[in-house]
Image 1: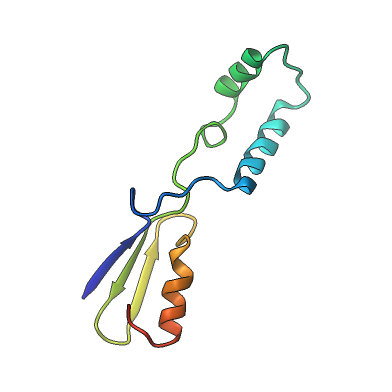
Image 2: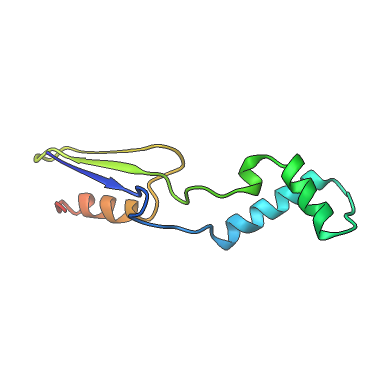
Amino acid sequence: MRVRFWGTRGSMPVALTAADVRDKLAQALIAADGRRFESFGAAYDFAQRKLPFALTHTFGGHSSCVELETGSNEYSSATWAAGHGPSAPTCWRDRAAGRRR
């Protein structure tokens, strides 16, 4: 049996995409609900005190995945969170073509 870990810390560093940044910005603007800030400091203070961690911090990029090869035609993968990240298409394409990795 072969166990392969994908997306573990240090193996595939992934930054937020531009769409991710825009999503966070849009959510923060909605949370501001029309407030006007007199300075950068006032806006920063609002973000630090009022916005949830998920909007003001970054973590991950893609979730980790464990791939199990049993040596037969069986194949399994498991993910913890949003998805397999960029490795998934390669894994699934290889399996669909009957190739072992």
